[in-house]
Image 1 (cartoon, rainbow over the protein chains, first blue to last red):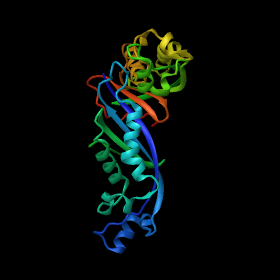
Image 2 (image 1 turned 60 degrees about the vertical axis):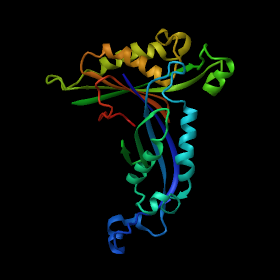
Image 3 (image 1 turned 45 degrees about the vertical axis):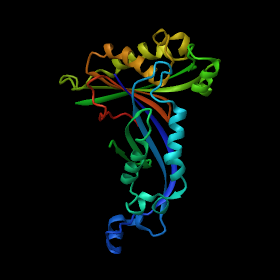
Image 4 (image 1 turned 90 degrees about the horizontal axis):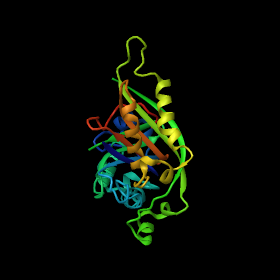
Length: 134
Length: 147
């Protein structure tokens, strides 16, 4: 039997979709409203899944207090109420689409040592979400 | 392959306490969940069964049959119960979401005779849930449960 423990977190942030590799007209064509130079924001939901043996002494794959503190430090604190393009170093080069946000969060959370990160799902709005499993 | 998902809810109380730990260690490891009086949740259970539809009925299994299995195996056992003391299958275990989901998997698996139990997803709160898969089941299903 395999068990995955999943937890949902939230952050709100702004971004602008604009690629340095594309011209102005091309950026407007590809990204539409999301290319607005002033940026815009979303309430993001991050759903993370971890696997691992259930510790018989605690009944847990990972202690939630430890997991929450790790996610808070690695993702929520740096991302919440920020302009992702400027304030997250990785997005100075990469366009902060939800695809890339998903990958960046995965790379940060895979360092959580008590359990194995299985996947990260990011909801940009209630109507779209992206999932990355490494 | 069709993945069919049925959802039920039950409400129950529990507490986390390991008698092998000191009182201080119990408080440190389990925090608020160690409150000796217990506390409760509205659990939401999503059960996914995988199979091919029967050509004569168009169904993987009769939803009524699944509903009755869930009522008998889960609701009757766990709804409005104190999980530590009233559910023998959890005796000697900390009734975490992980352990409850595993118990539910073991209760349901032998009862699902049409199709095959694919996934048990147990929400303790909307922001905390556990997925249980049998050996050999892909961890990434296309199970169409509400997410």
